[in-house]
Amino acid sequence: MLLRPFGRLLALVYVTLACAQEAPVPTHLKVKATFTQTDKDGKTEVVAMPSVITVDGKRATITVGNAEEGVLLSVMPKVNADGTLTLDVVTETREPPAAPPSPTPAAARTAALAKPKGGIPLFHGVLPADKLFSIEDATGARKWLPLGRKVDGWTLRSYDEKRQALTLTRLGESRELVLHQAVIEEAPATGPAVRRSETRLTMPKGQSAKLSLGGQEVTLEAEILDFSK
Image (cartoon, rainbow, N blue to C red; front, side):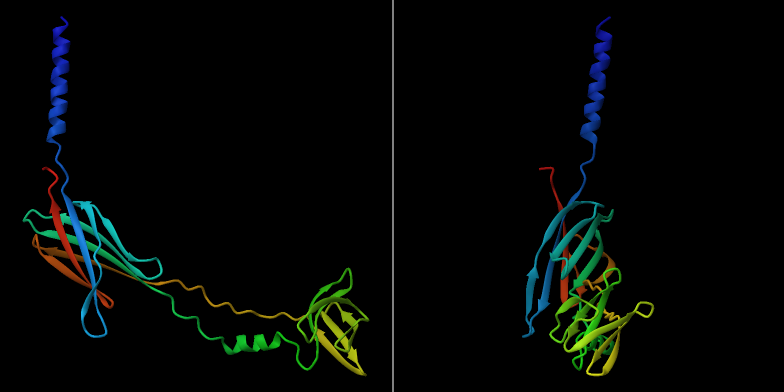
């Protein structure tokens, strides 16, 4: 009575082991990329020779350079029934951002306005409750001053809250200052220029294929690895 269950268990173990032994081993491939460029004398020089191991139908990534300037090469090899190899290649080339543009005329005018002209102070802010005014003198220093105080020979005479206008007087001359609001033009944030392309290459086993990436040439080779030994 006990032999039948034991026999069934042995049969189940045998079937399980047989299935495990019959599971196909995935084909592994080594992909090598040789980056070359021509120097100023017209000679070809090798920049980099990275390689990566992956599985048939699985994508692998090769990176040369850095995030700001370099090449990212994503390769998915496929072994075809006729023995040829197909490489699906996605390339990303990154170039450093261009130099920021020179200041526009509007920005230059704004910078010029940031300093007092002709000995006239600048009016930057007001605290209405305390009746204090932020004034910039000819040296560029800022102070909180009340009405009646002097700066660069000018007396803070009166303030029109509705118009946000401060009146200054000096030796019988009167000047009205509006609240100074400098406009700062920020250059747009720039990152590396990224160029992306996709290519499919089919080649006989043992041969190579070439790609052009800007000023560099990339030679791709794929080798089937034998892990059964």
